Image 1: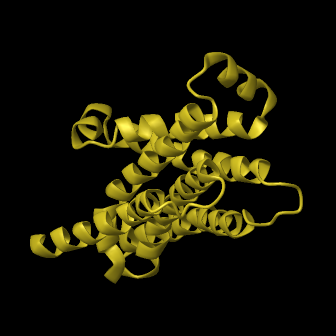
Image 2 (image 1 turned 30 degrees about the vertical axis):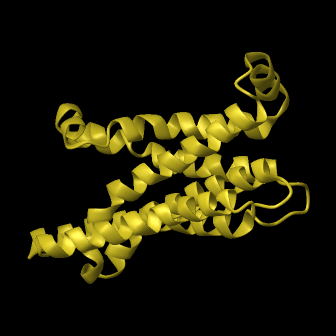
Length: 206
């Protein structure tokens, strides 16, 4: 793929990833966030992080589905960093707007609200992935170790789902679509790996 095409794709990815934040800021400036602005900010940042995480996990299955989609790998690191960016904004909404950066309030929330514990766990799982997203980190860790470390994204997807389910009231099914998509994306990965090994064995035998 031409470098110019890659630049265009990454530019579009930047625009797409920043659009939810731009819309959120516009609604904040125009005072159209609704009666509970803090809750809306938490909702937008959290859901954006979730669906960008879904997009990141979808890249490998899509590439396996069609070689024509191999260019998606050029966007995976960028989208992954935006996952961490929105997850951080989501956490800062709790720290600043809900807890007021008060240590006692934060400690109380962490001991009494299990969804906050799971949300914090998700952010901590994403942190090493963001810190090792550079080419330098890949060289330093080695490809095999880097790949093992970045398998934490699978666990982060699951803990994010639990965080969402625990956050909503009993009977609310809004986390269901995310959960189904994530389980499908994680479930097809062993099949992709098996198919890749089968092709490699066939190539050796030939």
